[in-house]
Amino acid sequence: MSPSAQQASQDERLLAAIAHSGAMLPFLGFIIPLHIWITQRDWSKFVQFHALQALIYQLAMPSAFSVVYLFGIWGLYGSMLGGLPDRLGGAIPSGLLTLRCVLVGMVLIGWGLTLLLGLLGASRILAGRDFLYPLLGRWLVHYMEGSKNM
Image 1 (cartoon, rainbow, N blue to C red):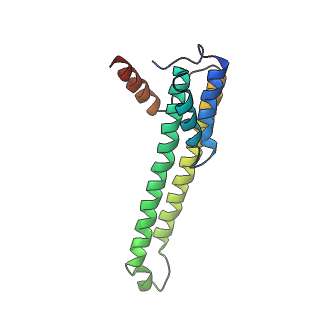
Image 2 (cartoon, helix red, strand yellow):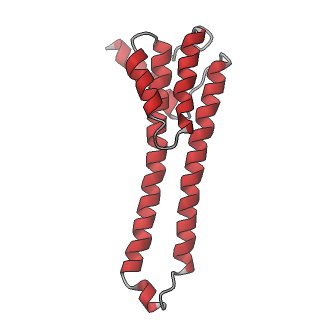
Image 3 (cartoon, rainbow, N blue to C red):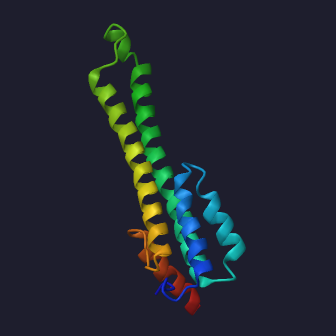
């Protein structure tokens, strides 16, 4: 089980909340939990867990949505380079434009979700309540318990 926020000191909760708040810096926010995890992981299991959880989440979410976007753009421009606009008189088909808008929307939703969950995590930790990111938090709890038993 992950270390409890109720048993953590105010300093531990503050550092954990700062790690989660790194989500406010798009594509650079992972530096904050990385620094906290590297410098404080031996001091507190609570801080170690939350900094690592925030680090993985803040690396995974923007990366995943960026990959989706880049593959979509690659597909869009790949089809354009295949001569499709020349056959249509230089116009981009509305389906491809719609796809690009959907992909941009997915990236914005992904960043918004990252920001929302990061701030939710920070506020819950500061309030003395436990917080786990969906899917990732439970996996990390099992992973850290497994490494403790080795």
